[in-house]
Amino acid sequence: MLPYSIPTVELFGCPVHAISMQETLEIIDQSIQHKHKLHHVVVNAAKIVHMQKDPELKDSVVNCDIINADGQAIVWASRILQKPLPERVAGIDLMEKLVEMAHTRGYRIFFLGAKEEVVKKVVEKYSHRYSPEIIAGYRNGYYKKEEEESIARSIADSNADILFVAISSPKKEIFLNSYKHLIQTPFIMGVGGSFDVVSGLVKRAPLWMQKSGLEWLYRVIQEPKRMWKRYLTTNTQFIIMLLKTKYFSRG
Image (cartoon, rainbow, N blue to C red; front, side, top):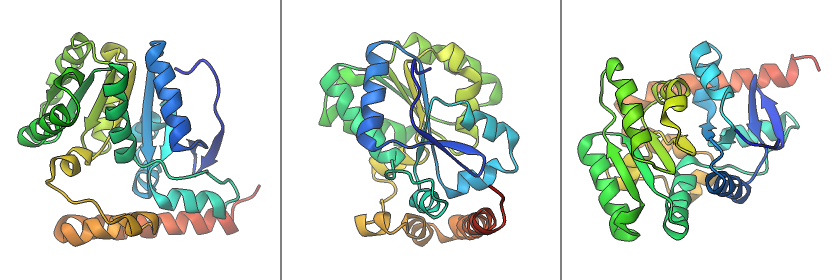
């Protein structure tokens, strides 16, 4: 928990911190140095939509210490609703910068999530790019519910400074919210499908698509059968929520 408050706006019932990437990095660095427990999450249009109907997911998100806008749609919505966020803080970009910080600061990272071959590839890449010294441990993201507590304890035993959890929503948010009291790692963060990107399994959208808010479309192009219905549904619902809030909400 942060010992001080940071600027926050509320969007669709979710608090989002109005801070830049650099400000986020500085807060995380200070928290790790002083051993302040910090739970981080990013929100995008899909997560905001799902939070409206999933109280456990919503509780897991709003209880985090830092909530960044991962999706460009969230930044645009904040400006349309006259509650402007300074910029998008993409989870994968933040993760990459934190791995680099771990190397320069001497922090150690635990990687949890994805398939075994994927998480191993991530660990190998970062070990080669930086140093094996930054690796506190790793585990794939396939496990049974009854294994969660022992996994949380093994992360705690690793004495990591940073924990990245690459598991789909809402599983990762609920896991972190449920077990952060056992994990005790100074900084914990859900990173979604970032391990797939880092390992090379999935390609990230070109920069122009990221800046244009079309990263979701690039994912649909890569995995049409799995992604098209998900994004069509959540994007439509998000636009409807935005219009209702803009034109029909009071205050």
